[in-house]
Length: 325
Image (cartoon, helix red, strand yellow):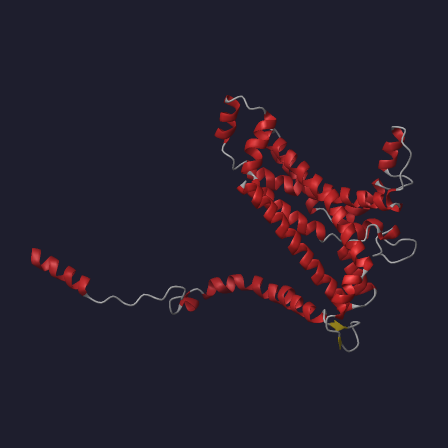
């Protein structure tokens, strides 16, 4: 019996095995076996192809053409980009965007982090606070801009009412360059603080509680614990929020467009007095759809893309360098 059991086993071991598929190649028939899974995820890729990849490719082609949207296209070569480099209004719009981004994004991320720490320490009504913080990020930008237009109104705004109450003269927020930037930055801060606070809260809940207990035993106070434990452990989350907030801030459009509206009967996309609130996306929209210059608008769109990429890389490198240090 011992021989009958060992011989088949030896024969099976000596029998040649079927060749394994080469690395990186799917077994033959994998597409047939998993076609239902591919079909389930195909709508996303089809929509991305139709509404993302193809329009992006066409805009790159359009950046080298002169076109008013109706007539024939005329090849322009690099002339659109050469003019872009000398377009003072474009660079003013870039400067406005960067100033508004700095005034709105940097305080917003700090307030969001502090709010997340407070939410994480809350004992009661945690669910209500999370909901209340997140509501502004899902509220219509148009509705929010209308409300902030009332808050910063020169005649009956709440801000001027508060200034009057403490004996300070009124400020024409929406008629002065710096007042416009403050109003737009305040709107962006209010809208996105809760969104980032919820993301920070999710990151805080992954930090082991033993670290805080050990720090408390060693005599570390709340401030030292925040900078020595909370911030280092949240570096990946902070990096994510910085990159996303940079992209969102540099692409701001609806805030200025709705908050400022038409200036003295002029273009809706002028950005208010002295173009102080004209962001780079607002300028792109003005050139493309207000002036019907689709070729130059496409060139501006690709310039915006490059600016966003450069700032995202800078933010990434800065945070990564601090993490290595």
